[in-house]
Image (tube, rainbow, N blue to C red; front, side):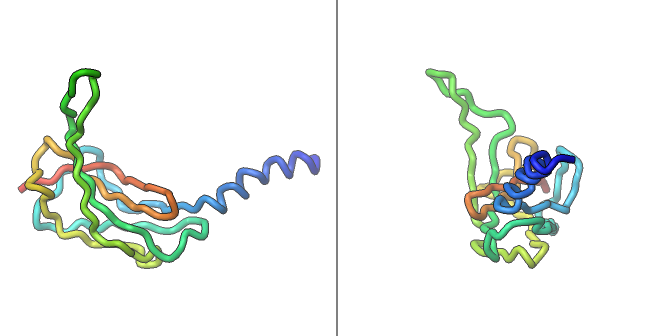
Length: 132
């Protein structure tokens, strides 16, 4: 392999080291439903980068089928976000959320999903439903 080709192939690796990444380890089927009052354990590992020691963890809820707003049309997902923790440590590796409705939203009308925010990066695992 030529020297210039090796340098070219190294560029993506260098770019990735500055970006940082979190890998979500918790896996569940798409369209999963979890019971109100039970515990949801979100697990992750930090893969690369220097993004500080902590991230903000939020819970986002939004309509499965948005409201069509005229004129436009534009779409209103009636989203709502709550902060679960302003500073979860990357090294913690997990967060346990006792499932509770946000603004009374249960059933199959509203998606729920976690949001991890750090250094201008947003990570969103798969959405899910909650119900009684």
